[in-house]
Structure formats: structure tokens, C-alpha cells
Image: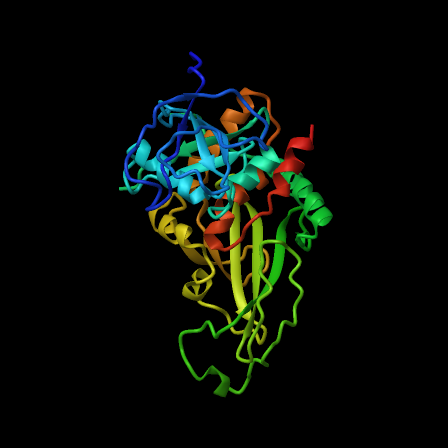
Length: 140
Length: 216
């Protein structure tokens, strides 16, 4: 599998459910940094005034789930798993009856209201949090 | 189509034992209950939750002879994911029970659950769902856990709600296969319960994940 260039995209702000569509911000090249560093990418459309820090998340597909073209995302620490699931579902254009699961450590499904920042503190390494996602069969 | 991943009963018991070991370390109150004469058994957790208003749909239950005494923060809830609610006078304490049994016919674990007030009155499924995260209410209607039915507990012989196991392999197989690829040790019960538990109001603390990765 060809390794993507080290681009980190900004996850759209969680105004509505996970964000409508995908606003691909100009890709910023970032080097992996320890979590205590400043915000990952400056110059985005998000007002950076807040002290909300972002963490890097690497999304990996499991099974025959479609692979996201963009795997690496910068996400606010307070984004919940539920928000992330909604976002990925929209991104992959899943139908409503298809379910998406997210796993940490490749085996454990965190609660939907779990914040990614907490998961990063517990399971992040090399400056990022790896999350696996898996789609279940559509139920007609 | 991927070959389904099943677990044998011995593996089920071993995974439960590891799970319970960690539960004891963090005070999560899971325990193993052997059946009377057989070599099998099940995993069980009971927890109490204070509701700050009456949960049942029909009013005037207090006139029913047995009344629930008003509780004021009477219980210290052991695990993180329960909130200790500052209870006003008309509060109710609800006892939740979760049982994990092995299904020989499906070769997967099955989640049995029920809830009741302290005087023994059972909660309806609707009442239990009031405690389920909104996210899961939608998800529950869409599968892949198929249905919740009411069945007789195979060992206790009492009515429980059951999350039907026929679709378990649908969501477990990809996860297990993926882990196997990289030789990662996965506790089937931990994974499975993290997925199905929240659907019925049962959340696993994150420390279970760390416990798994430390087992070599």
C-alpha cells in the first residue's frame, strides 16, 4: 500500500452533525509533534483564537470497508467518537442503514460520547491516534 | 465473504476469566457465576442507578401498596461511567443486571439483561432505553444486532431481555481477522461487549483496552 504524503487535513467543524460535505483545506505539511505543541495547522478557516488543540488521527479501514482517500486528520480534542463516525459515514457516502464502528487499539469500541482527546492521551503514540473503522452490512 | 470467526466455549470461559480479573482490579463488579451442576456458567454484573424522576410511564404507582422510599444519594456508584445524581425526594433506584452467556448453537456470547426497581417491579424495555445513549437508539433500530427479544434465561429460568446473537459474527469477524493479521492478542469478550454493551446502557471503561494489550 503506497504511503500517502504527510498531509494533514482539517476535519470540518462539528457545527451540524459531523459537518456537511468535505471542505478540504489546503494541505499543510506537518511533522509529527508531541501533543503539547501548538495547533497543528495555522491559516485554516477556523478561528484559532480558542485554546482548543488538535490531535492527529490516522484512520484505517478494517475488512472490506472502503478506504478513505484521506487517512490523516487533525481533529479537535473535544470531538466525540459519535461526531467522527457521522463524519466518516458522510465521507464514505454510506447509506443510512449501514453502520460504522470505530475501534481503538484495533479491538475496542469506545463509547459514542468519548472524546478523541482522551483516547489520544491513553492510546496515542508517535504523535497520533490510530483508529480503525469498520462498516457493517446494510440492512434493507 | 470472509469466513466467520467463532469462539469455542473454553475460549469463552478463558476470555471471561481475563475480563473479570481486570474488572476486579478496577472495581467494576463483574463476576462469574457457575451453573449448579454443569461445568459452564456465565458472567454477571449488577449495578444500581438513581433516576431523579419516576421512570415508569404509568402514574400513581406509589398507591400500589408497595412504595419506593425516596432516596437521597444513598448509593455510591463504583464505576466511572455512572453519575452520582443529586436525588430530589421523588427519586427511584433501579437495579440493572447484565449477564453474558455462551450460546452453543451460535457459538458466540449472548447478552442478557433486565432492570427492576428495588421492590422487584421490572422495567419495560422502553424504560431501559431511556438510559441508552441517543446515538444507540438510532443504531439499535438499524441493526446489525437484529432484535431484542424477551427470553427465559437458560440457567436461571427467569425472563430476561436478550440481544439476539445471530448477527454477532457480522461485526466481530472483521475485527478479529484484522487483529490476527498482526498477531495481536484480542479478548473476544472485551471487544464484543464494547460494541454491544452501550446499546443497552452498559459502557466499558477504557482501562479494559489497556488490560488486553498487556496480556501477551
